[in-house]
Image 1 (tube, helix red, strand yellow):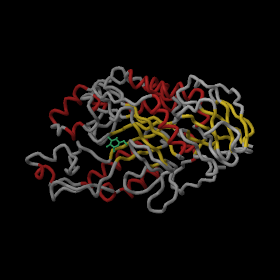
Image 2 (tube, protein in one colour):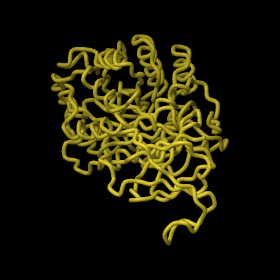
Image 3 (cartoon, protein in one colour):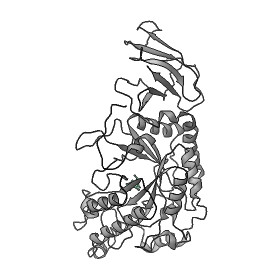
Length: 436
Ligand code: GLC
């Protein structure tokens, strides 16, 4: 067993750290303006105007089974779906609001279709639930609320009672965790109690406003074992670095212990469908994000933002295909793998992962080193080596320093793997090393 011990948490993360790769799905009314899921706040869009999206939302091409199939083909083992984002629109049939998909042309419970389809493909099922709500009449205004600069902002906000909103959240979380069978992850988003406010009467929001302790206790009573994130401002099972690549295993900042962590990333910077965004990540970047994350003991939750008609556009399909093609042959270096033991140090241009049973080391070649890969410290430890994608043998030499041509690494116990000069037709080739 891997020697890395993560902090104990209340939920069951055993499956999670084996599965490693999930699909985030950001889908809501914001897929219609198609210029970021925060659009209501960014452009301070009025209720009347935003209501147009409610009026015309019609996901006529939504086929949850197709999404589930794509997620599975891409090597993803679980998913997290936005049941409600900051705009407040509910993608499920809630008894506590009219602002829900069943009252649009969709005419049906979209969360249910998601749950059924993903579960049928054998994927674990998670819910994202926004703590922020820019539609709810009891949600007080603050620095990110769409109404923050209205002339009558104070008047709008002054009688709002956040305890009523906290109760609304408990009611909805009860619905979500009661009506859809076993739910594996609950992803709350997000807190900002310390945020500087433009008006003295405004207040950032955090665990006390959400009554997070109660909310979490409720969730745990309904779904024991469920994984909950840390964005209520109360540490639970997972830490969730967003849109950046941690450089080391993420720790609990309070205790210093290794955390169970999950990076969340986008294809193009926006979480919701963004029609005109053109900074889509390259295939290399997509794969590197997954590999580097697992090489540091983390999971990757990769986001798709479906169109308002309910399908994944060609750019998202292309990006998913990158994962599908690579994972088809290389998933062994991802599932059931974690950071390599400290004795194994990855050389320049490589990332290591190691199987949980410690028997196999995986060398990911971000920079293809041509004829030789020099691995200081590995001589005497390797029984057999092969390319993972085709299971073809890779010969290796164990020599003392000075044997090879000039400029080689001066190191004790140097192991040198001989490689074909030309990189195989795999975006990131992987060497599978069977350790002695
Ligand atoms: C942020 C954003 C949000 C997105 C989320 C994903 O907190 O507010 O739009 O859903 O991160 O991590």
